[in-house]
Image (cartoon, rainbow, N blue to C red; front, side, top):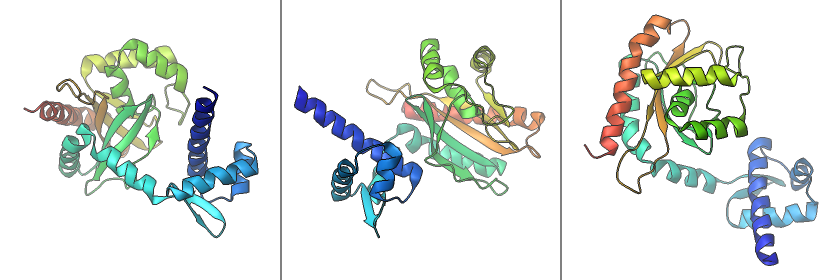
Length: 255
């Protein structure tokens, strides 16, 4: 049991080091050790092990994340049913609307952007790979509306309701009331809640396929600047987003 606990602790530290490098960027072993408040000899041991496995690379005395992680991330995304089926619909929405279309999947209480496409007039954001809270954007709220209430409470307890703009919903009862509305309508809206100047409409995507299918909830959206995304246009785009989400669900079921 003691040896097993040591192995678990060692694995946890290695993963913590990777997380620190993602935040710090290129850093020396001493800088990472100071950041994590770990002994420097321990840090060197973990970094050498991670470098041997190509999870980090050392260049001129500084460590940085290795490309093996990029390869693993691509594999993780390519294995998602919602990605394989949904990316064509994202492309189609962006072409039809001229705006930015995004595909998200929920994991461990966060939303991860797994694919996007830019129409001719789209704002140029590089979204893929980003992790987001679920409460401050249309994609995330659409996901929350499809989760059981007890799971929503768990996520809010664990992740909180941080304010990202003055328009972010930071009150739990207000958010739950909006989630109820989203369940009824089937679409979610974000009016500058995540980023000032950006509005979005989204719909959830669920895999209702055979047993063993990936049951994580996803969402698809159209986003654009406030100058083009009036309330009237958001309402007009909502059926397109909802239809795209429905088609993704049907294709994942094999229809």
